[in-house]
Length: 111
Ligand SMILES: [Zn+2]
Ligand SMILES: [Zn+2]
Image (cartoon, rainbow, N blue to C red; front, side, top):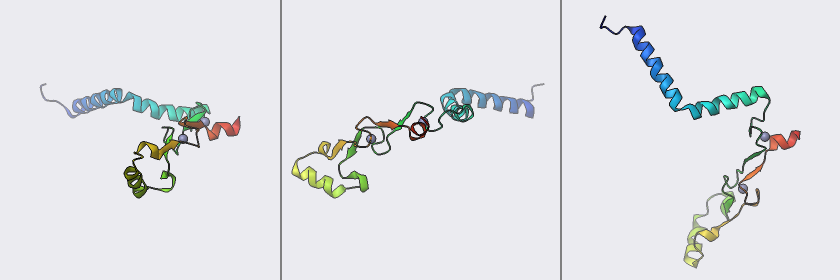
């Protein structure tokens, strides 16, 4: 009776998995929410929030002055030597007007 059978081991494994699933519930929720959105006809891009994070500034509302077309290490160094500092190489994002998010293209299409 003291021997742990394979099925008991499997049961323990499933229990551990369920525990893990509970701990990582937010992740699973997000996954389920995504599939639910699709089945509910909600916007799969924004979940009917009607806004998405700005891709240009990554939601920060700020972009590098010269950073739109790649890295500009030389310019940054140049500005440092000029005494401008790093901050001045960031400007307000013109795409989202420094809000960090944009109207969802999917939703604005249908509405
Ligand atoms: Zn932006
Ligand atoms: Zn949307």
